[in-house]
Length: 330
Ligand SMILES: NC(=O)c1ccc[n+]([C@@H]2O[C@H](COP(=O)([O-])OP(=O)(O)OC[C@H]3O[C@@H](n4cnc5c(N)ncnc54)[C@H](OP(=O)(O)O)[C@@H]3O)[C@@H](O)[C@H]2O)c1
Image 1 (tube, rainbow, N blue to C red):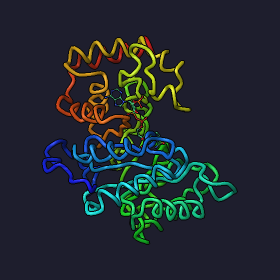
Image 2 (image 1 turned 180 degrees about the horizontal axis):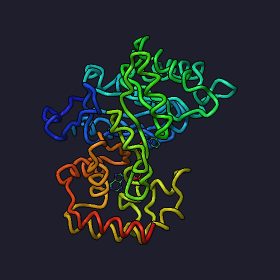
Image 3 (image 1 turned 90 degrees about the vertical axis):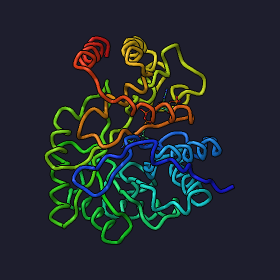
Image 4 (image 1 turned 135 degrees about the vertical axis):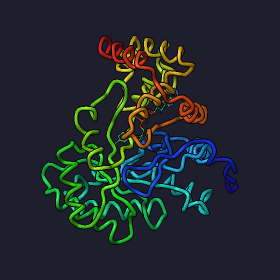
């Protein structure tokens, strides 16, 4: 049956302007890297997407290779769009990316125009939409001239297949080069998608300064360090958690961070938040961060994470204690 979205969805969350642009994104966006593939439960994936939309989460982030199997997260989200959200396309920000291995042969990976354009067309087909809101270069290609990858991004916008373009995992120098090359062609680079959380502070080493200078937005992925900072492994390894299934998070790694997450969990408790909520508030404390890009396996997690936005401020003392714990235990 067709979904009827919650009438009060736009009162559930706030929206941040994405850098110097006209586009606003919800403070929390939902990523479809896990739990939306053909090997996952479609009924649960549908429930997650529709629940998120009911909570005011307008932005859904994909990539060509999300699954498993690669491509299947886009196909499944396309099905949800068609069956439940067809009349809400104008209320949605749908992003996808190309840059990692997608098909065999020399044209199925990295940053050539040949690959990026073919991948974009495939993404549109799987999603069943005429355009993406944001099309990303998923990673900088050390062997393809940046002008060519930018060519592909320019083509995406000029052809109407994408409204905006973004970069993911580019370092500050690569970001500036791509931004300037796009600018020469009259296209503004909207957004950067880096990894950022209490444990992984890479973007503080120059990327955030670069984005602020260029007035680009930042949507930060894995704010919960794939569940470790979600408090998922405080008491061991729950069945069906990502560490039991994933190739990217092992049980060993989840347990290695247990002391750290327990110590951080104490501060979260004193703030009246769960660890997941504090981790989300922590990334959103940075002005340059437009949105925290979470993943979720249940609607309860989404509800809890959206409630994180009710308390975003930190005292200097709390921040110092978090820093100390991470320095000592990470
Ligand atoms: N650009 C890139 O290269 C790149 C790379 C990685 C990710 N991303 C994007 O970022 C998105 C998010 O990444 P991520 O999934 O790693 O994000 P994350 O938010 O750090 O981790 C999500 C996981 O944390 C757990 N979780 C979520 N809310 C929780 C809560 N309230 N309490 C306890 N546990 C909770 C869940 O684990 P369980 O499944 O165990 O329940 C969930 O699957 C991806 O979907 C993708 O769109 C982009």
